[in-house]
Length: 267
Image (tube, rainbow, N blue to C red; front, side, top):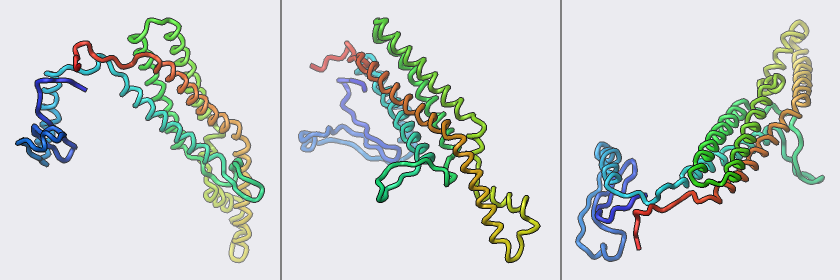
């Protein structure tokens, strides 16, 4: 946001259309003789964005001496993404039930729903969030000389890094990788060909196909049980990360992260 009390021109635009003129959004301007025009010319809109607005900014005074609100908004957007990914992972690991016995969640060992893309996206978002918190720590040094606050924020950062590494380490588990790659239908076909190709023909095919499916399902269940602890730990690690990050942001937001420039006098 910038201030320039000598400017009365208006530029209002999107990527597709632009208005340039002098009218204010006011009743007075509605009754005045004002001039302006609307353009949908892409070259002209790019000129306004890349040249004209930058020139106006250079002739204007920033409203804030510093403003870290955009940084906070960016951080919270990534945290929101991470929360959604945690829910996505949870719904791959657990299934919801609602019946005569009540409602709740049970561990999923019947459907191969776990996806590597979900885990990869979680790692990516955690990495982004941790990098942003490093920036927050740098900003804090500009906002306060309180060593206790700075030390606390640095401790938060170190603990966030620990949780990030913990999640990455769990995600590298060999059995977990097998579970992610497991395809029940593909495994059943493989068992059918490897173990029953000689017997599974004509009227016996359906029977041996069912046997192969049962064996594939047993392998899948075994994998699910072997990796349950890791999967629960992954979900808990993300939850701990989100809780810790929220606490740390509250600490940062107690600082004055926006300061109006002393050169602005709009009294």
